[in-house]
Image (cartoon, rainbow over all chains, first blue to last red; front, side, top):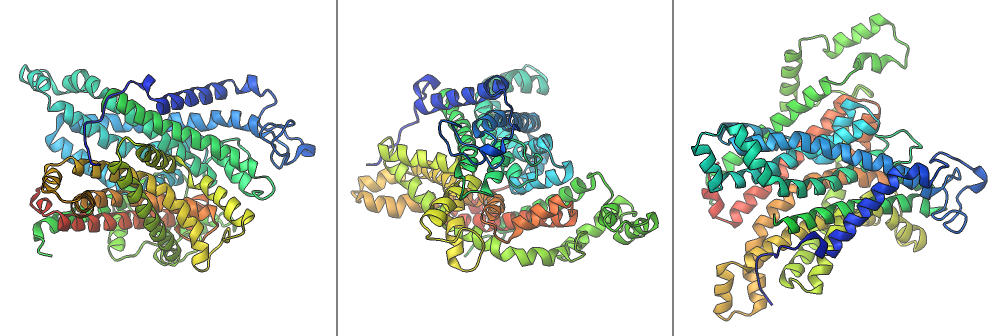
Length: 276
Length: 312
């Protein structure tokens, strides 16, 4: 009943869940890019006579209160939601990576100082930190994306540091140091490339967190203006007539959940494939 | 408990430092916010420039930044979080009024999350690479990925609107707490299950478990007496780290179920740019997080004597 062996390393192509996640993310991204072609009517085309149509031949995923097509809005909404996710992830990595890499590569006093700062930031509950950032930056898609990115940066810095520390302990780094290679060159040319697999895998997981919490801010009404087909905002709108038309909020929620799930599964899959 | 003053003292000092850092960051972050608070406050009443200037002086906004900062830190030290720009009431009092419902939800969700997460994690670790493991791991990642603002709507749809078992929104008694606690607890259980699984798997591979089994102890006894006890400490520490997630989740869950609480307070404060309230919620959130983690650290050290020797 009880056994324990080291986890096996499996390539991404041999992991069904991670592969499905990759396919879903590709499809969602492609659909968002192709939205103007796939749904030329646009996400704001209202038709009062088509109000609250259930999913069926007339509208595949139904319509909302103003008669706007849910599928069309979902496709266009991917542009908002995924863009937010990518900006947020870029902010998290752009701030967290240099911080963590510097702390982990240089060590000693720099490490202690930077990690104290990061720990202080980590003491803010992530979503509350993002909300505080929104209070400073104002509402809108980019402020929300930057806010969740800021909140996701401290955990990313922590991971980057611990990976850098691990690589730094390797004999070849010691050899490089002994031959007088300057610290920043060691960090960029020796530690970074060897830490990359773990850093990429964790960045993918952070994408899931950023999507989940960015859409949450939009759901709370702190982000995009009302009526924007962003998935979290669509959910909030659909909540108002949940009883009459559960599809109006249900499908945006499903799309968001599947995308967050895909980011998490892909992150796990990458970790397994890259052996980190 | 026989715990050395050294360990507890270091942890306490660390907690105070983190709190100070949080309060400082909150102060300067909100100082960066564009716009004149005095003007924002009086804009609706069509105040004259003199009235705005008078209000600025009253709020201490014309003083040097360092003075404002020192005043702010001293006030926080005495539990004074300032006054709401919107309502003119003490922020601390406003937060205290809303703390009850949020704490109630967070505590109930924590119980749901810990029970469900531990059960899933232990099952998955013990039955590694069977369908039980696959199912438990899948449930964990789904819990982790599902926004509470979606699962909450689905729960309302099913249990309130269709089955009519439980009230959909509002508060008042345990019946109103069931759905929000289940929804938030489920999303929490995912990350707890993952950590419990990793901890239990690690302990299962250790030498003392092998020794216990070699002595012929029954598997069940090994699991419940040795493995779970050894895994409890680390699992507890990482669960405490999830408390921040729980607070953020509570904010959203409150909104879904139209409950009173810190979430509603924070969202309204942000929309109205009532910055002292935003700052107060953030500082209190950090305080709660630091306290929970401090308690978890001390409990962890009590469970595992080796930690007390640790330096740094």
